Image 1 (tube, rainbow, N blue to C red):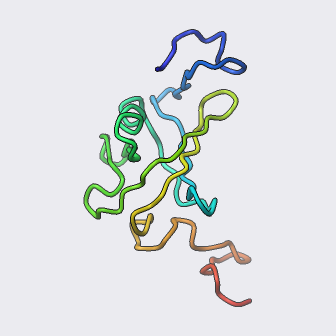
Image 2 (tube, rainbow, N blue to C red):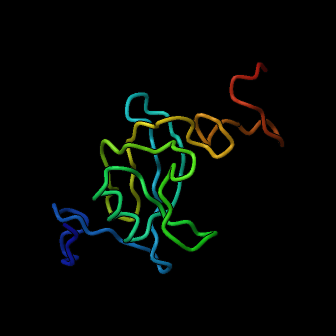
Length: 127
């Protein structure tokens, strides 16, 4: 499925992920039904292939230096419905259906705060 012909990277139909010098690419996870951004993580070739093979999101854990299946300990897996790739194939958007909270804090999304002046406020807090 992954092609090595770089002539098609930006305009062609071949899937040719462009990993950075560390062997990673960015992956934004978006709720497949609501469009809410749930998390951002990194994928290496192993994580991408595991995601394509299983239909569940896998990532590369930079802190542990290994493959990580989202929800492997919590059960809150991400069922991938669609994968979008950007123009130069160095970033992905995974449209997924979460089986519970996405954030390790227990929040629905990792993006549960907003910058408020020089500090942070929880989304939904009144002004």
